[in-house]
Image (cartoon, rainbow, N blue to C red):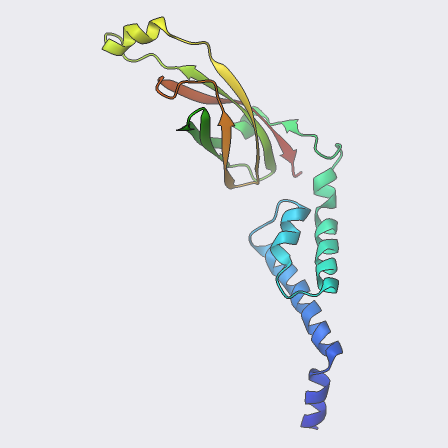
Length: 187
């Protein structure tokens, strides 16, 4: 009896079935944690080295089925909507000089139902305290604010780094603010 059980458990059919069950179980467990935001993220998170071609196709089909409605919704693929003022208020981050005209920033998306796809930032001169030695010099060189649109895909409750080329002297005093954001609603 034991040798028959071993023979059945070691058969190629049972091993494939075990692998398939492991893949499906993996998809279920991934759904309970580290949520992918689109079918590409889902596939990358679930296709592991050593997975058979059939298993990879099963993962891809499951991921496409899971995200097809959220990705396409009622708008054409790739079309983003402007975030409301409330949703935009949940975006935080920083930006500053890194190397030459390239500035580096990071953006945290505090929204649960939005994938941010692009932001518009404004950089403006900052006036030092009145009476300081820099005050008079900077008043003469005060610049107009400049705006930059940055493509950065930030899933819900996540942060991403971005880079942007700016026309700004890194030695100039500056402040920045987020003036607009576009993204895709998951509702």
